[in-house]
Length: 244
Image (cartoon, rainbow, N blue to C red; front, side):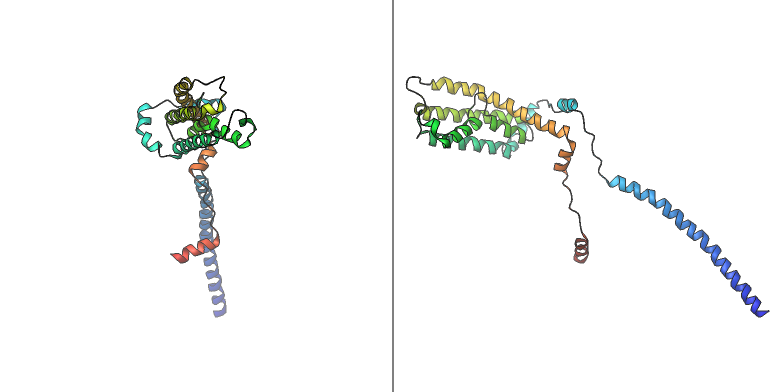
């Protein structure tokens, strides 16, 4: 009888343990099942959402910006210390100095045969010659300016026209034929009238083109504003923990 009682007690304790383990396991399974969608939702939330890519026509229209004259004038002192202004300005002044130095040793007959003179003349055409505009200067200024690209281009056009006038009064006599002299005063005046306006238009077109590229490809602007964070390995994690 004592052995039978012990057997019954053992069976009773075993059934009780089994009954207690069933709700615990079911609750753990339910909790685990509930955690799976929440983790998936958090993973979806952590992923950066990519903006939709607009059409070409929408990007063309959205790239236009109205002129804010007062805001551009207030921001002018800050824009003059940006590389989009002083970079093209230094290129214009340097091209003028090199052109005058090389042109003093050139004549109308030897200029066409000198390879270095061709390169110097190309730089002069891109950064100084204001008729209709110094294309290289205006493009760099417009593509790199944060705002007021037209105003930066206008100032650089005035600078290019002044450098062009210096070149005309310095070395124009050595590069022209005595039978066909240039009207230096009229050509210099034409540079001051046409160069600033053309440079402002060229710079505005370059700024519009940059905005069009950013609108047509939103990922390009997002990569510039939010650089990708480098992946951290196990060694870096251990080193960070030890440093704490």
